[in-house]
Structure formats: C-alpha cells, structure tokens
Amino acid sequence: MSKFTELLHDVDDDCDEEFGDRTWIIPKAPGETLVGADDPTRNAFEAVGIVENEAVALRARGERVSQADRADVQTSAMSVSYQERVFDAPHFTPREGDHVVLLDEKGQPRGRVVKTDPDGEGRIVVYLNRIKS
Image (cartoon, rainbow, N blue to C red; front, top):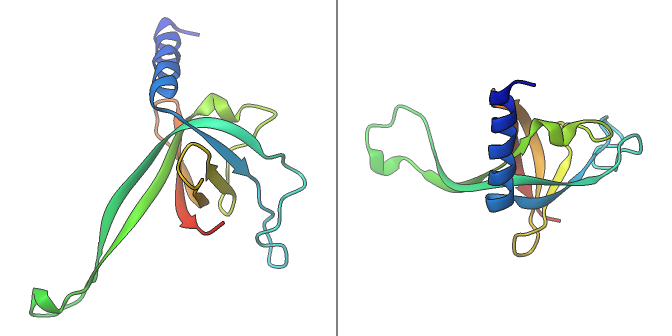
C-alpha cells in the first residue's frame, strides 16, 4: 500500500469518526414474488457512513409560458458515503432494493437503496429513497 493510500485511509477514518453515523444495512431479496423480503443469503450488518440529507426542489418541465403555472415540489435527497473497505468480506455492497436504517438520527429513518456509485476516492455513495418503517 502506498504512503498516499495509507494517509487517505487515515483521513477517511478521522472523517467517519467525527462526522459519521451508525447505519444498519438490511439485505432484501430480489425477484417478483419476494420483493421486500429479507435476503437469507446475506446478513444484515452495522456500518459507519457520512449521511447527507438535503432539500431538493423538483421542477416540472414543459412549455408553459408563465412561471406561475409551474408547480415545484420540495423533497429531500438522502445518501450515505461509506469507505469501500466497509464492504470487504464477509459484508457486501448494498444493491438496489436493500434497506438502510439511520441509527443515530431521531426516529431512525429508513431508506431503500436506489443506486450505489463509487466516488473514485475510496468511498461508495449509497443513494436512498426515504420509506416508512
């Protein structure tokens, strides 16, 4: 491992310690008949990640003349950034449909994984849609 990689891991560890939240990752089974059922082939586990909750305005698109006719919807976007090594064996990288519970937030909100993207700097961003638990 290069010196740069070692330093990057140290910085990631410090960021997770200072800004990270505990999450519980629950695997869900894929398929038409088992959607939403727990996946018996993968175990749920706790992981620390940096949670981002931001307000987002969704804007309607169209060819209306007046801006006053356009309806905007306020919603929130949730994501969690994890170190890639969090998902080393025996753990797994979350996939679409899995659930993530934010253990350190009030009410322990839950999100359904929409997609995961590596950020190119040793972290994986997991995008979530908030769901009722």
